[in-house]
Length: 267
Image (cartoon, rainbow, N blue to C red):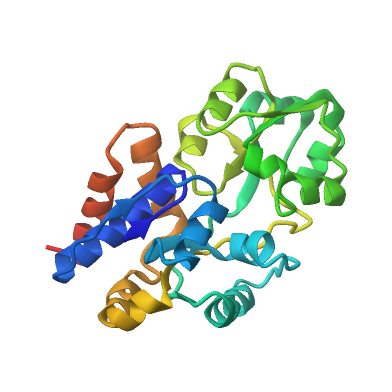
């Protein structure tokens, strides 16, 4: 049983894992995608209601483990993988290759008007701007709550707008700043300016496939198989894959299957 939380990127990765397993083993995969926020998918994995799920190191460290961010990606991965194996009975495979960290983005005209390059630049004019973010981002310590403490942003107002609608609101001038994931295809689709996190607040969010240890014990061959994806997906490649779904309207399953064929992981 392969699951994912509710983003197109997660659905692409979930399909990728499902197809990889089905095409290389005799296992029939049940898919449970778009389960909600990352915490819901994690709880399902821990409880054995999911067997495999893509996750992010930064989310695991800060949001689930409630630890302070670690800037070094290798150390973050080790701390998270050791903790999850010992405390939750979950194994982290090798990282897939891309870092989907949080970022703040603005329209090009806003960046030009206020000369915005970094989040520190944004803090100087935050009281003139409206942030349109997901509810999850606005309530997380590794999201807006912690970010505001570090940068003292003090926006004119903060609106919770879910999914792709926050990009539409930004594009129609209803908001001025959006929370984004650095590999989202909609950043490319809307030609947005991504601001540099110059104080390095956001931890690395390396994407990693994870598995419940009971499922791994039952199907040990999955370790070698899923680790064939390790390092195969760069930041640029993930943006392109997301763009195909976010902007071009392609099906996540088809995008995932095409990627696997291109990398000769399936026939």
